[in-house]
Image (cartoon, rainbow over all chains, first blue to last red):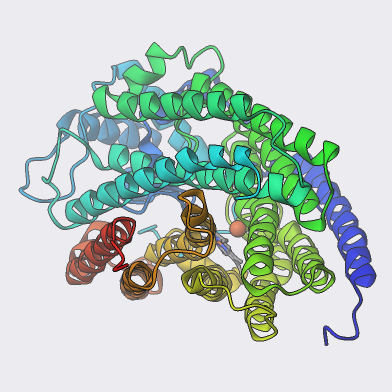
Length: 148
Length: 457
Ligand code: HEM
Ligand SMILES: [Fe+2]
């Protein structure tokens, strides 16, 4: 194959194909950015949700957990924690999360450990709101089942 | 060595190798924690180990690319490096910033580090691979800019070759897409979408240009095949990279809240992503077959061929198995993802660094024709130990992923097994993974030893 292709042809494929690929990708990016607010319910991002995201980031939760399938694979998926651990009930979930965060680290020998983050009640509440918001993002019905 | 300024590459290579040793040690610690949750806990929790492990990888690859560039660019440009002093300063600034950041991870809780570095002013921390404090990220921008300036000035003032121009294109792309690391919107979906502009568009677009250029350089030097031929292959490879890899970013936009059309576009475009990696195999073996010279540094060519093959396995084959949306629905975020990440990063990017180091380091140490026979033998042993060890890790993680998917993902909600129970069921596979990890460390130590092998006169 390569004998019939000259260097000039290869270079033209690179420039032409590359430019085409960039334009297609840029176009799709613009469209996606316009559609994300609706798919993610951007209007439901309250101050608490935004603060919860910062708690999530400042404690590097994603260093152990996945959220919508992305992160580390050491600890459970949390994108659907609201459904799994709170049975989709906001108050139940908040109570559960507060208890859970306070109980860490569990003292089962050699079980994988989650650190104690010393979060305030306010921070745990923000975190819960963030996870509740996340669980409602329209993401093609992923994960396949409640276990995440 | 044709130009004395090529010498600035040496500390970059050495430091990259030291960081690699660190990366592997932290990887082993994580492997142990997977088995014994109390290992090193609470002194170093898993998220800290992982952050050190992955950040060392990224930084070592940047050091490797920089060293490789500083070695190659003077020779390609047929002139001395624009500013060897700047390259030396860049080295120390980057090394100091890197060490300080790692110490920060290890010495204080992450939330404290965020506070100490004023993350609230411009929050960028706490996202996978981009955990560095904002100030470190700004430092990286300056380091990369000074590096690009140095390389650009050298290329502009000297001979321009296809290799140097493509390398430079890759570097500009690397710098450009890193800027998305500073964009952290409140909306998690938007955040994730642009996070991939750094991660995917690095490893599956811009870095592939760098990879292609470095591979081409070592092939020219070790096979003596003429440039017309090499250049043509290089253009074809990077053309396929861009055509498949840009829209291919869509294979990360299936299930994170982005529009449904990505299920199709991401699947189709990324299904073509193995092509450039396959072309690299044809490229390396074709050039080796048509070689005009018998270079005494045989091991460098072995690394070059190895990069092409293991890169294709890790990125091409292991990438393809979970890149179609209906399959990714079940594999997304499992140990299978980890399996792929390991072999892809190692095969393509760690191995290209070894390739360049193996070629350039003997020359920098005054052995124009490569190391002696004995040292090359030791290095060959280290090559196989590392390659087999990494493939072992990958196979173990693949088995773990398949079991995980079977237990946790395939059954319906009423019957699926929970995450923690599933993980407990896989623990023996994690023991095998750890054993192969030790083999990789053994390989690296053997590699280090090859530097000190004395030849009989
Ligand atoms: C050398 C090139 C490559 C490197 C270094 C690499 C590395 C990685 C890494 C580290 C991840 C995990 C990201 C995370 O933590 O979320 C990942 C994910 C992924 N990669 Fe690659 N990759 C490469 C090439 C490819 C190619 C060529 C394909 C497809 C043919 C591919 C398909 C995927 C897919 C589908 C995922 C998402 C997995 C999931 O859903 O969890 N990769 N890659
Ligand atoms: Fe990707």
